[in-house]
Length: 398
Image (cartoon, rainbow, N blue to C red; front, side, top):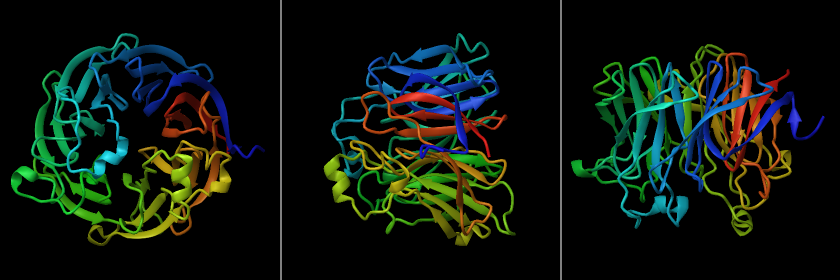
């Protein structure tokens, strides 16, 4: 058995440009692409035959200085983000109170009719503010958008009614104390370090990763008045920001359990990798959320640098980034940048264990793979995308 795979086999691969998200609904996969010269925003693929995925259509952006690296679908409605490309400072700019950027007025989200996946039809481009929209969730009635808004510092939550997709209507907002500058609040942190990454809806609650502010649970039983009902922050001492947070949909050992995953935030040069020796990598968290007012960590899952031949290849990132945003059993399908796909069983929340992995080869000309996002379809097939190049369909064989 190769060190690059365990209990996972590749069914097919397409050389698609780098991507930020893959969403699978029915027999179709929707891929949101990271910044690229061609301004490629979204690809739609037919994956009914997982050994021969077919590209049906692609959407390019008309807007300059923009990318659409996230895509979600509900029924025949697709939403993609529109976000400003990073400036010269990249992610390091988040520590600044203000970054000098070119004027930008395109940020927001687009709604598409995808009843014909070969010919997606733009319904509406809804503009928000500033850099625009990052990641988000949606259902038949609402979109839960992480975006910059005028008068706030960093991304906040804005909930939109999308039942008429030609005219999305703002329903409510949620932010953390210190973000609402226009309301007289003052942040206690530098720049945009504390902000909403995105929130996922489960029942009447949203589960939110809030970057260096940690984790939040937001009650939306009154969708016009979201309110925080739980929070936990492990920064410091843990250095990597909180990316995604979701509940396990059933009790485990008599407890309500949730999982969270951090993002290894910066691509590192060889010199930066040397300077960060001894610093923990981004990882997977398992938490007891039985009492939301007193959430407690139960365990961490880390991948050793010894478990990938590219863990210290530069430039690149090694640690965790994301997991599939739904669960049907105790398996969590996670992406580690140069560590590939890691399948983690949290049946024992005190001792999560890896039951499978797959590390794709680096994209041509790249020092390491940069596995970015993952989804799992109703057949149990696994889809992963690389930040630079590559779309893989995998099968867990345990």
